[in-house]
Every structure is written in C-alpha cells, then in structure tokens.
Length: 185
Image (cartoon, rainbow, N blue to C red; front, side, top):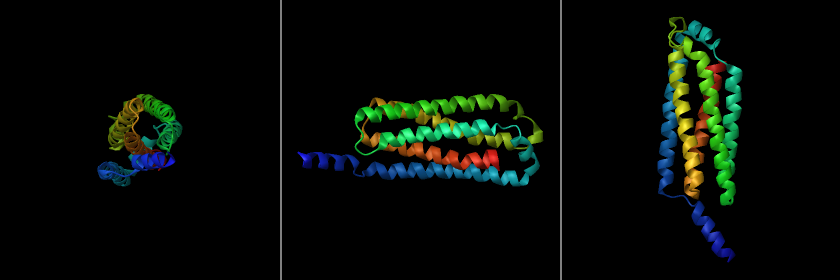
C-alpha cells in the first residue's frame, strides 16, 4: 500500500508537457516587464528632473505596505504548492493568497486615486504615463492571477496549483524588482 501512495505521489509531481509551456509563459512575462522597466529607467535618465519631481507625488510607504501584502500572498501560494499538502489546506491557502491579491489591488487603486491628477501635467514628463502603464499592467496581472487562484481553489488539481503558484511568484518577483526602480530610485 505504501508503494501505491509513493507511485501516485511521484506521478502527481512528475513534469509533463505543460511545464515547457509554463516556462515559455514565465519568460515571456519577464521579458515584457523587463522591456517596460528598461524603458522606464532609460526615460528616467533623459528626464531625471521630471522623474525626481514626479516621484515626490508617489506614496512609497503605501507601496511598501503593498509589497508586504503581495509577499504574504506569495507565502500562502507557496503553502498551497507544498508537496503532500492535503486538499483542504491547499484550498484554504489558495483562497487566502487570492484575498491578499485583492487587497493588493484595492491598495493600488487607492494609491492611484491620489496620483491620477498628476498624470496630465507636462512638468513630470513621461513619468506618469510610464508609471501607470507599468504598474497598471502589473495590477491587471495580479487581479487576473487572484481570480485564477480562486478558480483553482475550487478545483484543486496539483498541476493547476503548481501552474498558478509559479505564475504568482513571477508576479511577486516582478513587483520586487519594480518597487525600488519606480518608488525609490
């Protein structure tokens, strides 16, 4: 009987053809965000004064709180993906990860409400255009990812859990790189 459990667990965790597509998706996400971040940094070099002035209108402490929220969500996603986690625990961790994702979205939208008024001001150059493009693109990924986390929590299959939690960690990684570049540089 132990042999059956071990074989079933090994088959459940064995890589399949979907892994290749997952890594193509991961690298395409990293490439897209990398291009946007490079555009942001290069423009910041050419418009240093405008970028410095614009950063004064960002709420870095709120963005730092949002970083903690997103990392807590990632921690919950990691708990869901743990090998041998019971289905109930996986489900609960996925729901909590999704809820923290929605909290991230709510905080970001609140943050946007204080910044949107500066978006059309030419004194800040292209900062806010790139800022809203970059952070908004990330925000849409987090929103979509949180919805998928909920969907997967409803139908917890190990392969789906591994797929969405891997992508969720990519969104975490992107934000961890984006936060200091946008808010602290």
